[in-house]
Length: 71
Image (cartoon, rainbow, N blue to C red; front, side):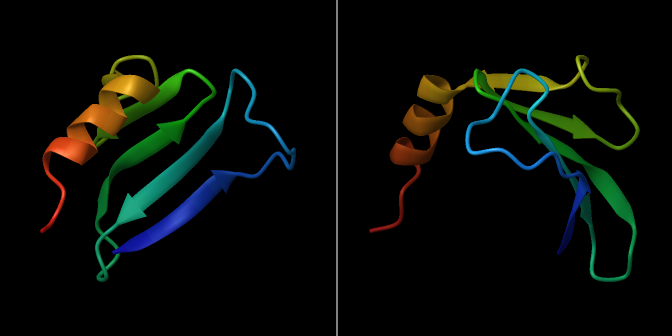
């Protein structure tokens, strides 16, 4: 996968807007955007705009990742 930071607002702490990562296949096909904010994360598949994607709070994401951890 190729992952690009679309906008890089340098700061020590994530703010409300957060950081948006553009995710592409190795051939350059756009898969979607992954947005990381202080309240959680959001996956926007394809051309879905921010605010309309799948949102998870940090506690939901941590629980999800812990439940699918590798042995």
